[in-house]
Length: 341
Image (cartoon, rainbow, N blue to C red; front, side):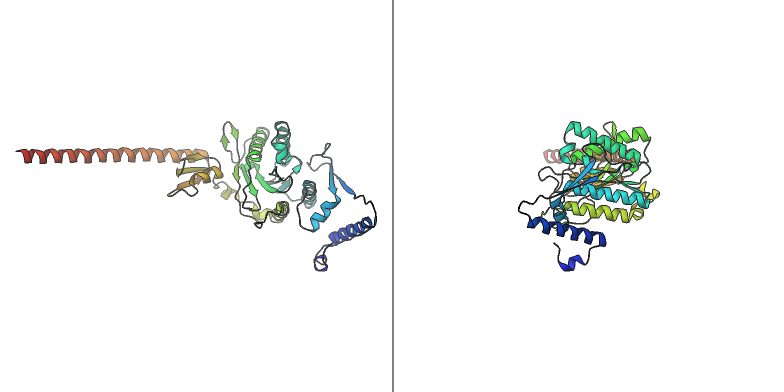
């Protein structure tokens, strides 16, 4: 199935799997009516993965294996199995800072439905509680409906610091994160109600919200839309686990990270809790002015002082204008009087 020079790069387990699949394929090709097998993996208990029917089993189709070797589009079940394997690795090695959540409910086709969305929200909330001491939670997410399971993003959530980073593959086509952002915000509110006050809290419309960073620089995919997003998401998860300690910011630096943004000059000036909302106001706006602040209280205070200063400047300019007009009128009256007399 693979060329000789690629086979030499495979690890022992991958080479063994390759040879077994290749042998099975040769046997099936000899048959007049081949029946391709379906591989089944049982989800183990105690991993905080979804264990109840129909999520208690992972089904891998025979042709999915060929997609793996050919670096083609990965089916959702394959990515879920990889997430389970990485999660098992974290438990085995005792990695203290990271947890990987089961992506079973993390599909756009599920979370856009009200009933399923509530179940998915509860899953995220429960996973946060089960991993309350973890610094980061990795969530594989499938954001597109049109081509089911063709695209994936790895979302890194820091619950205690109300922050979420979306490790997109950088395609030119932007993904719509509206549903997953709303779901994570709801889950964070439920988590905080059980876990107590968070280290960094940001509120909007009566609930807690995350700072959603959707333009985080990461591995970039080619401009050809070949459905390889899932590969990039898996690679990003692996790298994040590998450098977990280095990717956790010092507490002193985390406290200084902007969570609220003030647009002083933009399309719609004001205070924004989300970087993307702020960016839309200043992107390609000539003479834009904006700044991020660690807390909303500080941001609102700075913006209030800015508005007060603007009002003072407006009154001062108005008075200058009125004085100039009065001077012009007086000058014209004096000239008229001189001419007439």
